[in-house]
View 1 (cartoon, helix red, strand yellow):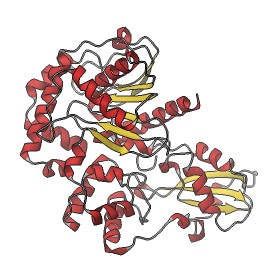
View 2 (view 1 turned 180 degrees about the vertical axis):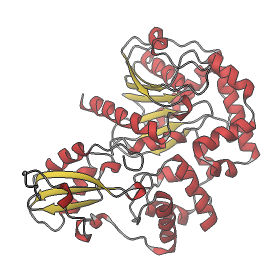
View 3 (view 1 turned 30 degrees about the horizontal axis):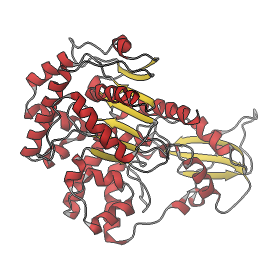
View 4 (view 1 turned 30 degrees about the vertical axis):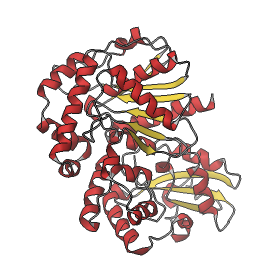
Length: 431
C-alpha cells in the first residue's frame, strides 16, 4: 500500500508493456512511510520524452495513485547468477528518470504558499502547479486540515466544494484570485466531487447526517473519465424546507440528478440511510422507464427504522460534534457555528423520522452490497444480505469489508471498496 491505496504492480506493468516502445517492465515500491513511491523500470529504446510519454500512457488507463513517480529506462535487466532479475541491482532513479516534464513549479506567492502547505499535509517532497490534492493522497480529513491551514496562513475561507471543483494547485490559486466562492456552496444539495468526465455519473447519496463529503476519496480509485457527484440534504442553509417524506426526498434528488445527467443509464451509491434513498431512487427510475446500471449499497438495511429511532433519542449537538469530528476532523467542527450545528441536528433527526414511516418497494435490477463485518457495539446486529431479498429481483453481490458501519468510508475500507467499484464500473462500460 502507498498512502493507504492498495497497489497492484502487475496492472501497471501490463499497462506499460502495452506501449509499443516498451519490451518489458517492472514496477517497485521504494522508500518507507510517507516517502514510499512507485518506480517503473522499463526496457525500451532511448528517447528524450519517454518518461512523459509513459506517464501519460498509465494516467489515461489507471487511477492517479497507480501512476509511477519515476520511469527508469534500461537496455537490459541486471541478472543474478541464476539468470533471474536482480531487483537489488536496479539503479535508483536519477533526475532524468523523473517525469518532471509534467511538473511545473508554482508561480507567484499564492501558489508557492499553497504548495508548502500541501507538501507538509500530504508528506510529499514537492507539489507542481498541475498536481491534484486528491491524486497526491488527499482525503476528507486532510481536506479539513487544509481548510484550517489556508485560513491561518492566507486569511481566506476555503469552501470544501471549491476544492472538489478546483483540486489542482493552480486551479485553487485562481479561485482565490477570483474570490467568487462561498462556504455555503459546500452544503448545497448537488455537490460536484469530480464533475469532469464522459462516463455516466455516479451519484452518491448522503448518510443520516446529510453530508456527502466522505465520498470524495472514491475518485482516487475510479477511471479518470468517471464523474462523481454527491447529493446532500436540504436545510443546511436554514431556509430550504426539510423533506416531509422519503418519497419527497427521492423526487427532489431525481430532479437535482437530471440537472447533470438528463437521461440514463444511471449509477447510484448510498451509505447507510443513503442506501435506502438510493434504492428508492432506482425503483422510481425503473418505473419511469429509465435504466439503472449500478445500485451500490454501503452497509444499508431496509429495516432501519428501529435503529434510527434509538439513535434519534440519543441525538444532540454533542453527538453531532463527535460524529462530524470523527469523519472530518475537529477543523470542520471548529469552523461550524452553533446555527449550522443546530441545522445538522435537525436534518439528522428528520432523516430518522422519514425513514421510520417508509416501506421499500421492489427493484428489478442487481445490487452491489458492501457489508461491514465488525459490530460497533456488543448489541449491534450486522446487516444481513438476506434482508434485501424481498426488495431486489436481481442478483445481490455481497462484498464483506472488515470494518464497522461508521468506518465504511475511512481510508482502509475505502481502499477495498474503491477498486471493487472501479472494476464493476469498467465491466459495465465495456458491456
